[in-house]
Image 1 (tube, rainbow, N blue to C red):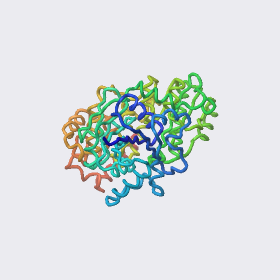
Image 2 (image 1 turned 120 degrees about the vertical axis):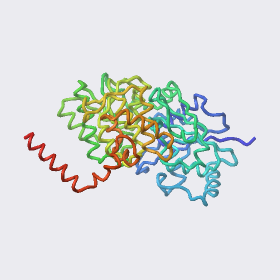
Image 3 (image 1 turned 180 degrees about the vertical axis):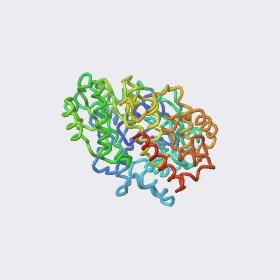
Length: 445
């Protein structure tokens, strides 16, 4: 029988840990060879650390026969901007089989985020290879971004994910009937322990410290750099208001800027002890070394793993502003941001009138409605459920999570009625509104 080679694809150290946990848990069939294919699709991959190069990750790499680099394979193209032309696919497959020593092996692929350019490129090159998908964060509960090519979607055998929102069912790839399978939390935590950085590189967190986790939203083009700095300052001030006098800031491993100067200045003003970590390490590795008194972030996946996998207290800040900034509406981070806003405690106690945290059991209807508004062409059958949810929840939370313009374009409850849709474009209507506001202001004065 022809030998089988499984190629495990990851772009982050946490992704490598998730793959290792899935492999340890028997989520894949036996194969003669298992290789790890890493990719750095950050804006400047030359300046970043390879996902498998993280200090202390050698035990994770030992699970694979060899480690391959997608960046090297497609150089000089950027992996986030390159996809193979259809006519080049046969030649590229022969080239990669020779380059990677695959010969005539049967290839099986384990991808992350099947709708990213580099994952799609790998799947296209190895035409017909069975696919598995792994996802570690809450984005798994949202819809697939855009319409995935059926020639790829129908090849997916299973969706592997961490149970970071217990009780919530993943929506990713459901349009192809892909079954979801939970990677056991215990196996994940064992794999993360192997990411522990040597003691001389990273010490344990101070006792009772609050941990602030960065997200690198400016690198994603969501937050302006200055606004992201202000978000981190809000995290610090909020932690101090909660009574924490020792604070640790962990920048996102992919962040190009460490955001330390403004935080240090503010910490000195507030009289708190601040540590800014220089070693790029997943927050989950910090959870294994220590037990923070509080984990603070915006909508980082680390908040969900801290709560669900480690039982740590968490709080979020700035989610309302993030939801306003996410464009287009179907941005892949929207579901994660809504879940953070709906489930996690508000650090500042106000956050613009944010809703009280919801119970996880009531999330299915919310996420179903959100999934339809994000991808109505992919999930048209979800319209009745979305209409029902929006009609039953017309209050502030729904207005915070669903943009009225989007609801209007889809003809959903909460949007502007069709017969009044001309009003936002009417100069006369705008003048009347301005006069009414001026009169109300004058009366209040």
